[in-house]
Length: 459
Image (cartoon, rainbow, N blue to C red; front, top):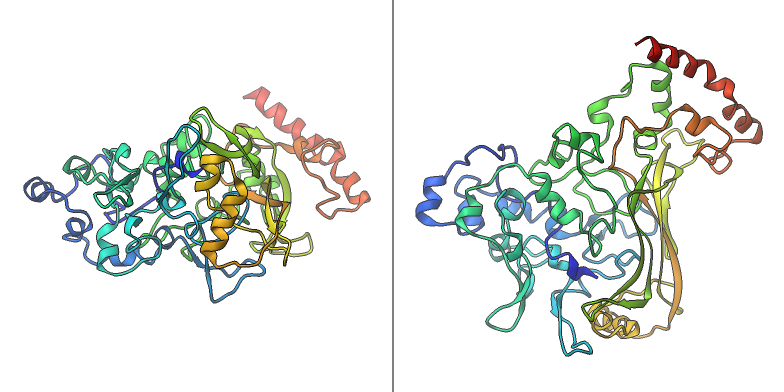
């Protein structure tokens, strides 16, 4: 499943993040004379940057997690070691490798950590590694060059027959560095989870997001400092650099000219009205893989395009319920820190350990080649040192936060929420029958809409 994503999940790496893409980057004459030698060249002007980058989530693929139930506060969690049913594997059990031969006698080079911004092929400077060798392996240009040749960023065999990641360290790419563009970020984030729009299901384009329509790029909101990237709160996205981004950072507590709309912001998140659709995979089956046209297998997946999926709405205070069968938002109406947010519900089938009930991980190499999912479970168990297990199928539900596909023109209006057939399940959100009847009466929005309608007619 990960072989379709042979670039990496990294918005920024080790060059000057504030430089404009179109501007000529300093050091042109130096690089034309001496070539580009990776981070050591960047460090001529940005000393110490590579070492700092090794302490970021994009390098470690993990961090301490303080807002999730049932995790060890002293441990770090992320793509490096998490087991959940969107991927059902991690960097540890799915390190770069070659699959067994399929029925046609062919193999694939695969591994979850193909999304790592280094070369983890020899295990010396892969996920979470430190030291000079790790610093030297950082792929700065994959995020900072507008001329990066992504065809070079793929797993390959080296002269020792080890599977390694390639990089574009050409002078041409090095001379085209600057602030990460949308392409730099989306080349990786758009294909997270096994293919285009599978995981998040959003397309950051002027047709689908008002920020893109204004010419903004990802780094305008996700502004990095020392390559620590601000992220929002998402029940499924645990690892973070300790910095957060919110709509309110730019739009404030009163983003509307209309006071009646502004009063909603105390208990309703901006995303609820302004991200009315999402997309991507909504269900997978890791116990049965489907054979593709190339002769290799992928988890059986149900998927929708961007803007096809209606969200579900729930209270969320930034903390996460986490059990083997459920990962989702915590919060309720009585909790003043909670707001109503939109989520994509994703459900997947995978193998659980009957002895204790924990979710089992899977090494994708075996099922990718042969469709034998239990062989993948056995390989992962061996890697993780699990000696006693009895695999049984089970389902897990995950809530994914809706954070992109922001719209102004198609935002929810009064009747979308306050009509009897509105998008909000008010009873599930904790409102009584009497309150629901009041909140879904035309009296609550009719006069307001009539006034707006007249204003539009006069205009």
